Length: 70
Image (cartoon, rainbow, N blue to C red; front, side, top):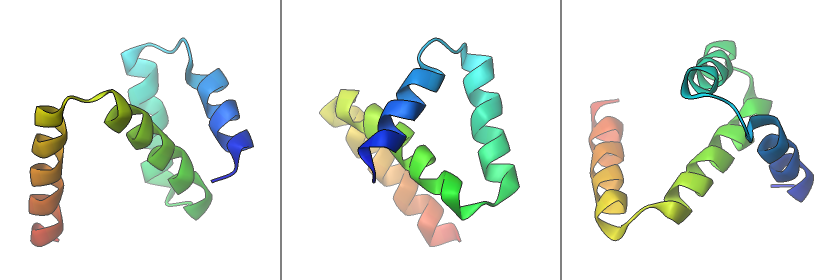
């Protein structure tokens, strides 16, 4: 991912409220636009980097279940 995308997203989302962030995520998912996927991936990357080992394991288990159900 281009570093400029990371910087732009970080600046855009730096001070958003949880409800504003949810609206941003919902809009990105609703649009089905491929160019928004790197931004969602960057949000996941930030979350993953801050997560504890236990939380990472829980995320992996949930993602695995989601993929199996698809």
